[in-house]
Image (cartoon, rainbow, N blue to C red; front, side, top):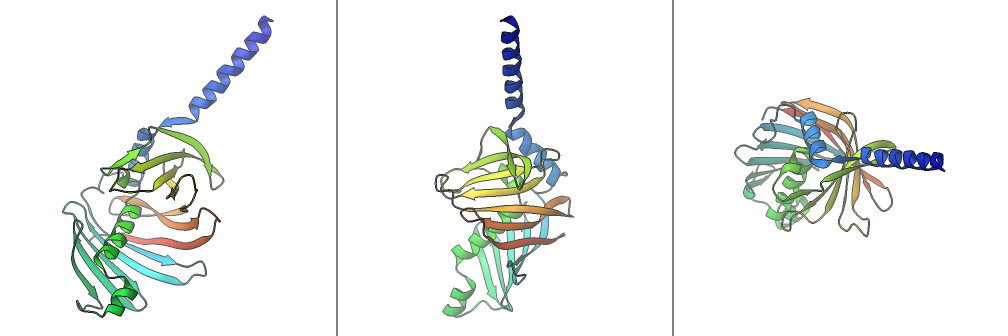
Length: 243
């Protein structure tokens, strides 16, 4: 009888230890990930020129986007090359200073519709790139809520740690999950849901790295839809240069 109790106790302790090993403080892992991708702590006050190219699954180039970032002064410009035209939008904070199409500040209503030139559309474009290119550093922004515990899970066939992030009202409405390598804390993927219960939204596989200006960012992100796993676009960071 004593032997059986000893075996049961040992089994319980082993299960308990394994369970604890599968959980980590999320803030600790986020710090580790930021140290990996931004080892010199340059993102918050640095200036960067980051070039991103989107491609369809058949290899067709969609847009070439050049983002000029000055985080210290809160100044940004987004230069988008699409359909043989160049759209340039400059911002101070969230204020749109100027928008040009092919170097001109005047354009038709049809051009505005086709190239999405309204202030809200351009701000959304700026925020999309600023957020995704600035990960994981952007997870320290105000209004970001990081669940206190990260759990071990499987993503893209590999064991990873998962960070769950939600946002204050007015900052963001989606729930995001970020997947980190257990060895290096490098970002290996992310997922978001508009509605956690519906399991909608998209997920991204990350591969490769590109280095420059003190940063070490994911190079390739392949985007898929959660509901049917359809791969629909790839974004590739070509370079990180001085602004």
